[in-house]
Amino acid sequence: RTWTISSAGSKSDYSIAITVKKKTGGLVSNWLFDNFKLGSSIKLTGIGGDFTLKSVLDKNQKLLMIAAGTGITPFMSMLQGLYTQQPTHDINNLDIVLLYSNKTIVDSIFLTKLMTLTSESNGHFKLLGVTTREDVDWLLHGRINKNMIIEHVPDLLDRRVALCGPEEFMK
Image (cartoon, rainbow, N blue to C red; front, side):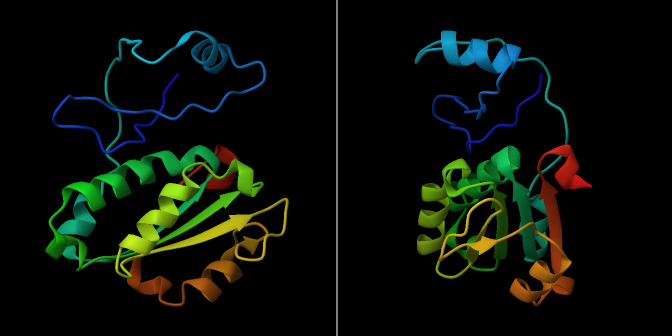
């Protein structure tokens, strides 16, 4: 089973965090929830993929991140690293919009952290939360689609786009 790092990582103690959603009937996720405790360790094997913000940081481009459910984890790792480890002048050249969809507000992993990043980013990071199964006043409602993106990200054609989420969402 693979998981995505959801923290920025720590250079001082070499720690990382992963985010695991407990699934009914899930062999590994249930084992982790039942047996893994603070201070436990686990052996990791191999790193796969090349999903980074480097190209955006190098080119000072606008970025649209589109995430659904646990697809937020790689973006959270990138954003935490960006806003905790990058010089302010690097961040001030960025314009990031995150369109983040969940069934309900309770399902929205990292919502409080994302709202904090929004308020502390001096306008360089914007969160657009979306729910599909409940209507919340301050969130968008419905499935992410072309019209929603065009309406809420009018400069879409000026942005690089990164997408992460369940397989059906990615189609």
